[in-house]
Picture 1 (cartoon, one colour):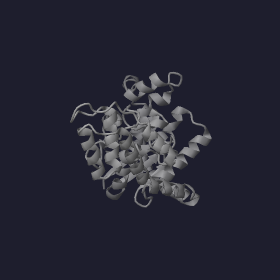
Picture 2 (cartoon, rainbow, N blue to C red):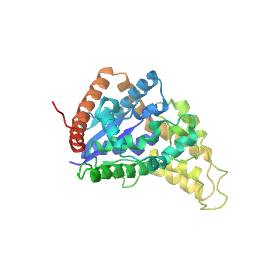
Picture 3 (cartoon, rainbow, N blue to C red):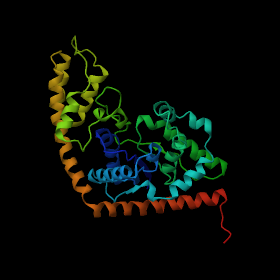
Picture 4 (tube, one colour):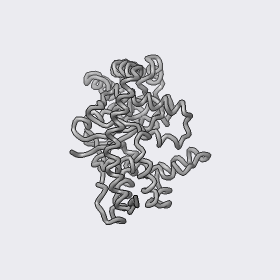
Length: 332
């Protein structure tokens, strides 16, 4: 059976973009493939979270994954730091990663510009750890967004380099995967691109937001002054609202607002109100399930334990092979 691997940083609550861009794929994958989904708490250390925030965020994300349908019996849902084989392979792969290629990483350049006072070694070698997360399970597929395609290419590069250096076929070349056949990008509310935590609280619809907060966010979403002629092309900001509408609203609702935009009769306030109500209807059952799971400590503990055991079985097999190939052999 083919293998898929993916993870998410525990930087707080999941938002609508995570659900449609990642979790939805995960639900399909756990039915079709041997799947490893992890909470990337080691990755998050580049931002120096407090111990309380780190633990709380891991718990939140674990509860959200489980509430949204990931099944410990069908996949390996684990916490990255529960698998010590990952940092060990990270050490070995760092020896074969070169400064120039790491400095050219788009994500590293972005972080340097945004956080000049925190350019740590973990940020520089971030692509190596991302690659190890994938390679240690010999993944065939990785569900990634458009902004992560470079990281996937670097993963293939690191894996192939190891294979060449040691004249061994250890790591396969993982490919991008999407259940729809294309990489999903859910737009944010500020008109700045995809929905993201980095865009600020106002940019994303979080499942843990209460109804009042969600309505306010949508009503404040960026638009323009409206169409001035029939069938005019939409601005990016307005197109973003229509893309969100397609995710949660009925076909009739979407057609109504498409037609009113085309004949210049649209009122953005009405569009936002409808989007808000449809969004709340979509979110409500998921939000309630998240709260139930988060309060079930026994279920959270058992799920994390099962996931760690599955992940370690896979990771230890790969690491044993890698150590032997490199030349690490015991004298006792």
